[in-house]
Length: 308
Ligand code: NAI
Image (tube, rainbow, N blue to C red):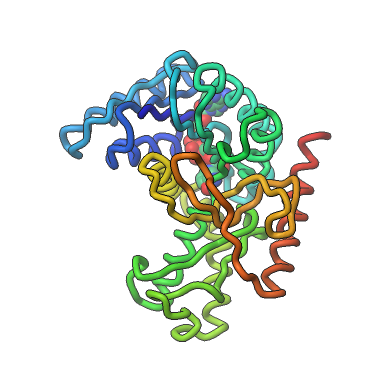
């Protein structure tokens, strides 16, 4: 198994590190446009092999796509991240050009790869990749909902003072501060609805904290986060590589599912060796359905910017 991570910045490097530590591949290639950055980070990371107990080989590449040849999974994190006060949508102009160029280069050497899009605005970048690359839809997956769900479970655990590992919860819809939908009604503490433990007011606070989870970190750190994003991507990669058939909310191309067509948006999907294998349909309440439709409208408006 060979995995390429494009973008050796904060998220890409953390993602490669997680992939190596979990031994998901024989080789990880880290590619970046900045001279020397990916080689340096790859070597630094590979020097942790005897310390962290893995033998995945990590190599760097300054924009030489030949080195990525034959990758089975490719993660695209290249692009600019947001700064305090910016929305993910502010990044569209620059990142669209970067994602398109990178994806085309990748396909020249790895025509069978499953492509994971991380660059923001992620739903629009996933849609762009789907439209431009002409790949089967199941091989293009946008990662955002796994991260947002991890944040959701973290805020729930803080509010309930229980282990996040006993909590289940999903965030669907767009990967944006105002477009994501933390499904508080369906969240459980080992199968028991969390509404049994938290007041409606507290649950709404958890949902609100989740929605601005990324912005909160951007304000504190001065740029966007990387530990949880990198780990979230690796968790998605793991389900593909080990064919785990885990259910995660991912941004995928919809063709009528959840009442939406011609858009990439976060819905629960089964993730396995073939990429996203099927959409899982949840019985949403009327207000959740309305929130999903509103989220789709906002993402569609963003997608329209691509053609202007
Ligand atoms: P960063 O600035 O640390 O790294 C981005 C890297 O991309 C840089 O090293 C840069 O040299 C490289 N790059 C730029 N153009 C390139 C090209 N044409 N080819 C190859 N490499 C190129 O940024 P960070 O924090 O790693 O974030 C990366 C992206 O991921 C941003 O768009 C950010 O908004 C997004 N993000 C998405 C998340 C999600 O859940 N979907 C979570 C966190 C970040």
